Image (cartoon, rainbow, N blue to C red; front, side, top):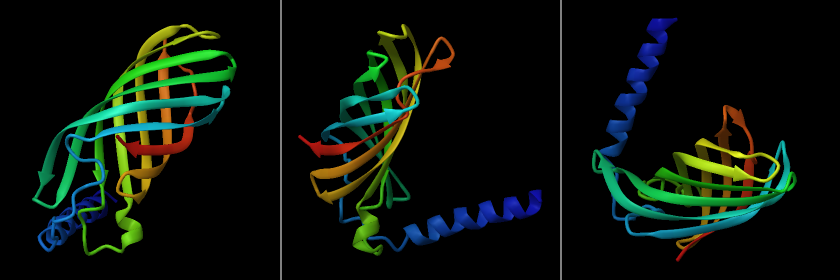
Length: 174
């Protein structure tokens, strides 16, 4: 079992670099260095419903093998929920990976951008606390500046996961 898993991992690694050598990186990633991106949406999850939003600034970019750009940024998030009447605030470091630079892919696949984030947050209202948070999500860009966004955001306050587990909304570049 371990040998087959290791072989599969090695083959995937080799395919990524073999594929990346044939890419034309003339198309920029959807989330690129210097972009200021805002989002807003409806929240849903275990603790109820609400509204939320955030803003993100992308300050760095690293191109792996000159074909796979990773962009790095900082984001702030806020959400207000009901029935718990909670206000969550958070700040985090983010990382994006998008498919727009892979010009050989079909257009509908190139519109995807994924992000991951880690940071600190706090909550006031029905729950009170502060602690680490984690977030991940994907955006589907309808045009270069506007996207439909789905997000999973989990703050951990005093070791308990509180807040909303998801957001469905929009993102736009400012």
